[in-house]
Amino acid sequence: MDTEKDSSNEEEAEPAAAAAPPADAEPESRPEPGPVEPATQPTPLAEVADIVARAAEAQAEWAERPVAERADIVAQVKRRLLGRAAEIGLLLHQECGKPVEEAVLSEVLPSADVVDYWTESIEELLEPRPVELSSFAYPRKHGVILRAPRGVVALIAPWNFPLAIPWRSLVPALCAGNAVVLKPSELAPRAGALLLSLFEGLLPDGLVGLVQGGAEAGAALARAAVDLVVFTGSTRAGREVAQICAERLVPCSLELGGKDAAIVLRDCRIERTARGIAWAAFNNAGQSCCSVERVYVEKAIAERFLARLVAVTKELRARLDVGTMPSAAQKRTVAGLLAETVEAGAEVLVGGAPDGDDPYFPPTIVKVAAPDCPLLRDEIFGPVLPVLVVADEDEAVAQANASRCALTTSIWTRRTGHGRDLARALRAGVVTVNNHGFTAALPAAPWTGAGESGSGVTNSPHALEALTRPRFVLVDRSWASRELWWYPYTGALGAIAFALARLRGGAGFFGRIVAFFRLLGALIQRALGR
Image (tube, rainbow, N blue to C red; front, side, top):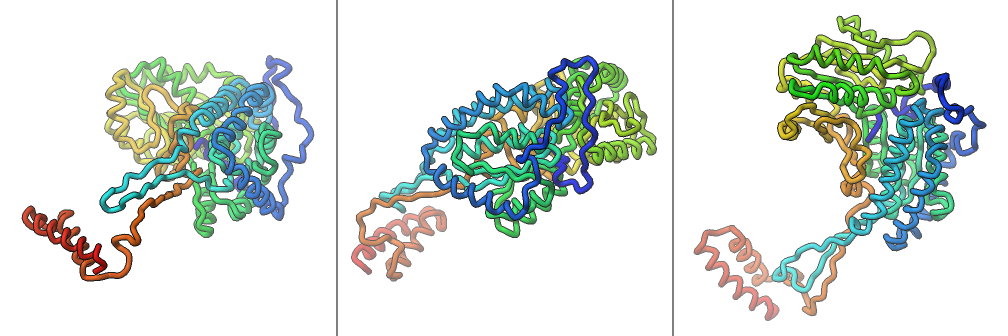
C-alpha cells in the first residue's frame, strides 16, 4: 500500500514542468520526451466495459490451466523486466521526477523479487486444505478448502510508484488465475503502458487490460463487471471507491494514506538514525505513504540528533539524491502546510518552500512545538519533515498512535529487544526497529495498515485473502439411505438431539451419564425407522 496522493483521484492535480536534468548527468540519463503513444491516451469511458468483458472471457480459460503452468508463464516476465531496467529507470525519471538509480532500486529490482516469490510459492499456497470432520457426526465425509480466483481484478494504481505498487498485486493475481485490468494514474500513463507491455505475447489476449485516464476512468472501471477492486491512493478517493463497491456488493482492497512516525529513543545510534530517517523522509521526494512524516525524539538527545539530521540533509543533492514533484497541485499543498505551521511558531532548520514553478522542493526539516500543528496532523506527501521533542518514550508512543492513519512506524534504539516489545504498543500495521519504509519490497512480508490507512494487504500469503475466495468442497462416501438429521422428524430424533445437548456440556457428570444411555436407546429407535 504504498502511496497516498494518487493524482487520478485529485481533481486539481496537474502535471508540473518536466524535471530539468542535472548539468553533470550522463547523457543517457537525460531523455527527451517522446511522442504520446496510443496506449497512453485516455480510454473512452464507453470502452471500459468491453475491456472488462474481454478480460473475463480470457480469465475463464486461464483459470482452468494448472497452477504450475500459470506460474511458469508469469515467471518469464522477470527477464524482460530486468532486461529493460535502464529504459524503465529513465522513463520513471522523466515521468515521475525520481532519480534513475532510485527508480531501479525501488521499483525494478523489488519487482523481480515479487515474480520469484509468487511463481515459486503459489502452488503450495493454493494447495487444498483439508477440513477435519467428526467421524461420528459426519461419517465417511471428507471436506477440503480450495482457493478460487476472484475473476477480473480492477487495479487502480497511483503515480508515485507506478510500476512497483501495481506489480505487487498484478503478479499474484495472475498466478492465482485472475484477469487484471489496470488503471494507472494519468500522471504516469507511460509507466502503466510499459508495465503491461512486459507481458505481451506471454498471456492470452485480453487477460490483462489497460484503462487510461483520470478519476472518471477509475470510477467507470470500478462500476464495470469486475469481481474485485484493488485501490491504492488517497483516503478521500478510497472512500469513494469503497462506496461504489458497496453498491455493487463487490469486495475491495484499499491501501490508503500514511502519516508514518519515527520514534527516536535516547540510546539510539545517532549517525545511523539520522541517515536512516533522512532517507526514509526524502526518498521519492517524500511522496510515499510510508515516508517518515513525523519524528518524536526524546529530549535527552534532541539537540545532538537534530544537529546531525540537519547536517545529513544538507548533503543531499538536488535531482541526484532527491527528485522532483510531478504535480504542481501537490507542491502547493506541501508549501501551504509548511507556511501554516511556520506561522504557528515552528522553526525551519533547513530547506523551505521554493519560489516559482520549479518542480524541485528542497528537503526541509521543521522543529515544531505543538503536537497538533498541521505538519504533524495532516499527510504531507512531500519532502518536509517535522520533528517534535518529547519527554520520554511513553509520550512518543502516545503521539505516534494519535494519528488517524496507522501504516508504518519505526523505533530507533540500541536495545533491539526493547524495541520489539515496544512495537506491541503501536497501532501501525508494520513496525521496524532501526530501519524504515523498505519492507514493502519484501514479497513474503505483509504490507498493511489500520484506520485511514485502509485495511488492504499486499505481499505475503495474506494478500490471497483478497485475490482469491475460499471454496469448500465436501465429498460424501456414505452408503446409508438417509442421514441422521433428515426427515422424518420423530420422537426418537428429538431424544437424540436433547441427549447430545446434555452430553456436550448441558448437564453435570451424572446427567451426562444418563444422557449417554438415552442417546444409545434413541439411536436404536431411529435406526429402526422410528
